[in-house]
Length: 84
Image 1: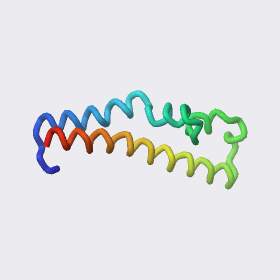
Image 2 (image 1 turned 90 degrees about the horizontal axis):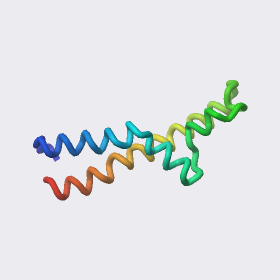
Image 3 (image 1 turned 60 degrees about the horizontal axis):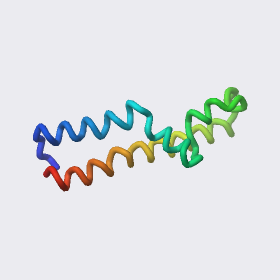
């Protein structure tokens, strides 16, 4: 994995750029009716702070981060098997 060939550097860039540029994690969560952070913020009852809202926002953020990291790691894993 510590093989920094130009092809591997391009692979890492592309597998991070595409999901982050187009917000694929949030679109995926909307598609599966998961805890989308965009839908959470669009809800008017979430605009005022309360401990309950903070807990739900934190959970939505954790779910988003897990989906986003998965979208980075899975393509990198399979492309690393091919490239390296």
